[in-house]
Length: 325
Image 1: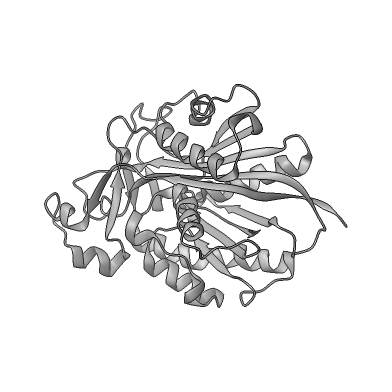
Image 2 (image 1 turned 60 degrees about the vertical axis):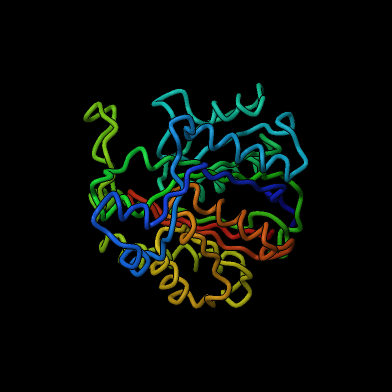
């Protein structure tokens, strides 16, 4: 039975100008390059300058994705921005990206699911395109997590970085099989009972402040490895595919040990895993599109490849999407 699929037309990303290495961090807090690499796999991250807000990063990634797709802002009718670090409480960062790319029609809104935000945004855009209400969606993951870090806390400030990535999705008719191009399935979960494991201790409705990130690292590691299995396995089940058929596994780039352990638990060969956390750190909702863009540009991800994206974030939220490139 034929059905509408959301195919990938273009991809782009942007990283702030400033690069912060582990050696740079050794001068700021009591840490070391070896300690950070051993526990996280991170070697460097990019930090936004004062004039590089989340929307600025998102606009640059969006422009790159549009150029890759051979499209303009006039061809897009929906913008969804996944972010936990908006420029303002309102208006939404998505509307600022919308105007930044010269788009004055359609709809734009933010989506907040922390590190799972991009997966949630892809799933949401896919539903809009499947419904027939919209034709092309610009899905952006953009973050400036450096703005919500305690730079005296060596357990958290070494983990995160800033950046943005974007996908252009377009509604096209498929045959309704797993051989179709586009988003084949998506699976989303959340459980608010774990709020105190990973959160920001502020907000306009509670403290009237921005707050800073707080995390129980060991607990997050345990849940991250344990929780992702269900949404990935559900994706395989829904499409009749398997880990053996997967070409690329592109998980949220939080920690190399989490990524490796998750792939092992799912039976995914390590050579199929895309890892960029060493270069970018944890960029929250931006990490998956940054990794996708890197793997596409270096020739790993090719047309027709079966790609699994997966993430877990504060809340907890977690989810997967299986995409035929």
